[in-house]
Image (spheres, helix red, strand yellow):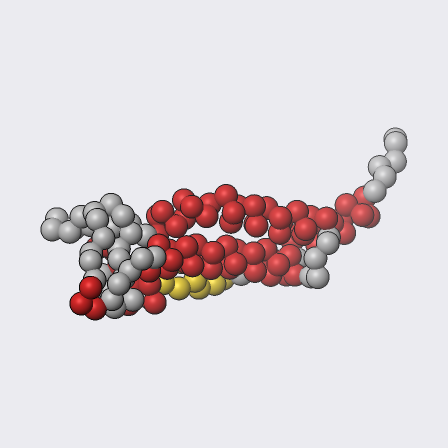
Amino acid sequence: MPRIRGTKEHSRRLRRMTGEGAEKFIGQALFVGGETIQVEAQISITRGAVSGKGHVPSAPGSPPSADTHRLADNIETVQLSPMHVEVSSNAPYSAAQEFGTSKLPERPFMRPAVAAKRQEVTDLIRKAINHVSKGSFNG
C-alpha cells in the first residue's frame, strides 16, 4: 500500500483552522466588516444634513437626513459570539425610516450601506480565512 505524504502538516493545518485562535481571528474580521457597514450607514444619514431651523427632510427612497443625529448615533456593531456580528440601529424609529409605514415612505440607510460595502467586507473576511488556512496569523 502506498504511503501518504504530508499527513502531519495537513493535520496541523486543520487544527489551526478549527482552533480558538482561528475563530478569534476571523471574528475580528467580521467585527471590522460590521463597523465598515455601520460607518457607511452613519455617513449616508449625516452627509449634507443640516440640523435645527434649516433642516430639510430627505426625499422618500433616499437615506434620512439627520436633524437630531439620534438615528446615526444609535447605530452600533456588536459581537454576539466569536463568529456572529450584528449591525443595528437602536433608535426607536429606525425601522419606520428603513422600511416605511402606511404614512411614511421608506428612507433606507442600512440596506444601501450593506449593498455598498458587501464586496469590501466579503474580501476582508475572505482574506482572514485565507490567512487562517495558511497559518499566517497570530493565533
